[in-house]
Image 1 (cartoon, rainbow, N blue to C red):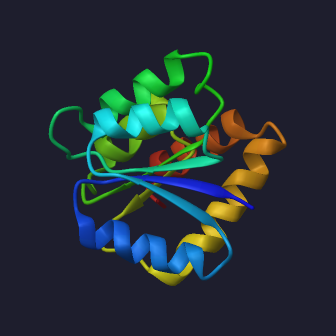
Image 2 (image 1 turned 180 degrees about the vertical axis):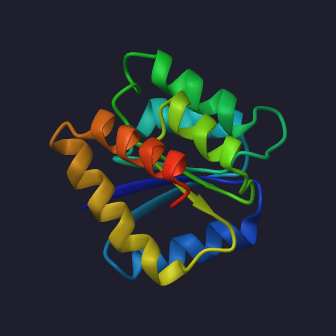
Length: 143
């Protein structure tokens, strides 16, 4: 069973994600801010983190950097799920170490297949290739 940690300060977004992921057989953990997200990630070691950028206390950029710096969480794939839709934000998320960048509003039905695909690709060691593919798409203007 895939374990997903959703880190977002908006409860309705967490609920929307939870409902759509649980119906697809995934276990969902939630955090309402970046600090709580880091604690849960360290303790629970989810298979993937869905991470908002704009949050109080610690923003998503800081959370991602911290997760990727710490040996116990460095291998957890990060999917940014945020309203920040500018190309420079996409690029920053990927350069920090995210493997995918989804902008709000998003299609909640498409979330579970995306999570499954990203977890499977990360398990095969394709995280660096995923980032390169996404960055190349940004450069081509086809994100």
